[in-house]
Image (spheres, rainbow, N blue to C red):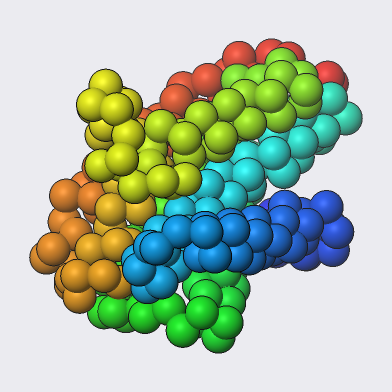
Length: 247
């Protein structure tokens, strides 16, 4: 498992496309939207920053799904999955070896984007422990969803298209682009069923309200619940994924 994780992590940090989706594009969006909305509205600067930086951090954390879909489908179509399945390596260890590197990448992404918010916009961070725990929960959800998508998608294009729907649709309906209270009531109700919404609520509770772990327990339970469901789907769907693998 550790060998798979190390190999996958080394491959990913050398992927320039991943650097673009993970770091460059989110920073461009953050700067652009803070510049636009900060200059044309009378919004409180701190609230604007705390809406946009965590909001786009949550949204772009789900773009890790693109890399996960590509990796799993390439392994499936190249015969790598079939060869690994013929070894004594348990299914869970294989999944963990593939999953852990992407969790680390998302955590690094969150640290970089929040660090950018602090350095450029003086964004407060609040309780460090609560911030770390909610970030880990977000990493579990986004990568767990990616694992499920990777074993369910038949083609790369299908997986990439569904990633766009989940990332952008979740951002729009989950209140990542604008405060939920500004949205129509029906969209506010939909938002509460999305992990994107609960991740942002957790971040804002910590950063804006000075909350601690006890104050974000609901967000944590819901996020970890989603993560467990996604990983369960991935494990349950693995036999089907294996059948599609070229020997």
